[in-house]
Length: 172
Image (cartoon, rainbow, N blue to C red; front, side, top):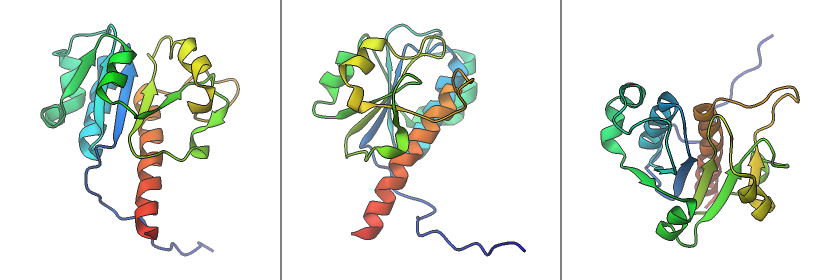
């Protein structure tokens, strides 16, 4: 027998909350970045690209994946991660890596969170994780798996942060 489905208390839509910023360190695949830009446009998150890119910002694959949503989100491209920190002083970074020990659902994402992801080929620089292990998180997966797709990983963690905020707003 099928169990009844109870309606969720989480709203089906929400207002843009620019208190979350997605940071991609040296992304290599334009389609992933286009998908992430589209995700940011749909959720109200900001998007920063750090360092050298594996594509140009006018790449046709980036534009195809981002569709007309690219007009809704200014993509900030900066040379180094410290430039993001300078633009967002006091924001809390969370470094997403397969090398982190803490599960992404075990964190309470505060207002003004930076969700930081590494390149598809190399991940994040080790020093970022070593410098702030308490802010390093991972998405669980089978031990014999190397990694998830970058745009899927961003969606998983971003929507967890949004879910937490929506639930907190319902409680207040």
